[in-house]
Length: 414
Image (cartoon, helix red, strand yellow):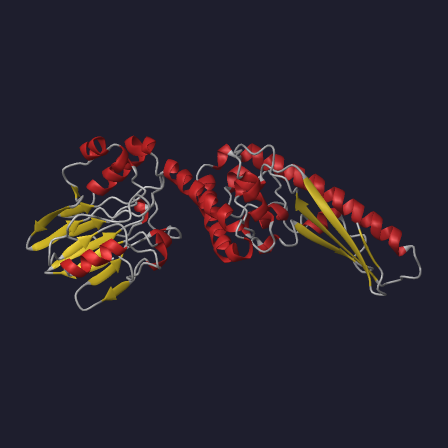
C-alpha cells in the first residue's frame, strides 16, 4: 500500500507468506515497511534458510529506509531472539517495542503478534506519526479478531497512522477516524493469484506450486464453498507448470510418447466396444433408428502410480482435477463418441481426428514432436482442460462409460 506523507513515498506491506517476490514495489519509494508474516512456515528450523532468503530480498530493495516488524509466523523471535536479531542486516531496521525518527517522521513498532500474545503490553509514545504492529486493534479492520489492549493504547497515544496486517480478508483497506488512520496492509490474498512479476527461478516455482496445491486441496475439502477459488487455483497451477515443462520439453518426450500410445490403445478399445454394442442393439428390430450410443473415456479415479511425485495429499489433488465442477471441460472425459444410424461404421482414425490432422504440435516444439503422431485428444487435454501436462502424461489407466439411449424410454448403461 502506497502512502504519501511529508514529501516521502512510503510503501507498507505484510503477510506476504513467502510470496514477497510477487510484490510490485514502486521504484521511487523512499521508505519500506514490512509489518510481519514474511514466511509461510512458522517453525524455528526455517530461521537459517527461508528467513535469510527474505532478508536478502528485502535488504536489496531500492529504498532509503527499510523497517521490519515481526509477525506471528516469525515464531523464532520468541524461541531464539538473540540469534535472529544477529541475522538482520544493518540495512533493515527492526522495531520491536522501539522506535526511530527519519527526516522528521517518527515510527514506532509494537510487538503485537496474535496467537503468541493477547497483544502488546508496552507503552506507545504519544502522537507518533506511524505506529506499526502485525496484529490489528479491536474494532478497526480486524474482522472481530483485534486486540483490546492495543485498541486502548492507541486511544491513549493517538498515533497519526496505524499500519498492521494479519487479517487477510481486509488487506488493502483504509479506515479514517478523528485521531488515527488505520491501514490494513496484508497482501496475501492479492499475491496468491498474481503471477506477472514472478521470478523465473525453477526452485522458487516449485515452491510456489506446492503452496498452490495445498490451497487447492484445502479448498476442495470445503466442498461447495471452495469451488470458485479452487477453479482459479487449478488454472494458475496449470499455467505455471506448463510454462516450466515447455522450457525444457526434451526431459518429457519419452513420457509424452508413452502416454499418447496408451491413450490411443484405450480409445481404440473403447471405440471397438462401442461399435460392437451398437451393432448388437441395432439387431433388435423393435428399436429401429431410435438408438443413440455415447461413449466417453476417462482417467482412472486413482492417482497415477507412475507419477514421480507421491504424497499424502496427491489423491485429494487428483480428485479435484477429475471433479466436473472444478475441471468443467473434462466433464465429458477425454473424448465423447456418439453413434447413431447415420454415423455407424465411422473409422477409428476418423473418430479420433487423425484423418484430418496427422499430428498435433500446438504448444509443443515442432521439431521435437513432429514424429510422435500425437492424437487430438492429447491436444484437448493439453490446451482445454485444467490438467497440467505433468498430470496426465503419467497416466496409463483409463476407464470408459458407454451409454445406450432409446427414445422409447428404454435405457441401457454399461
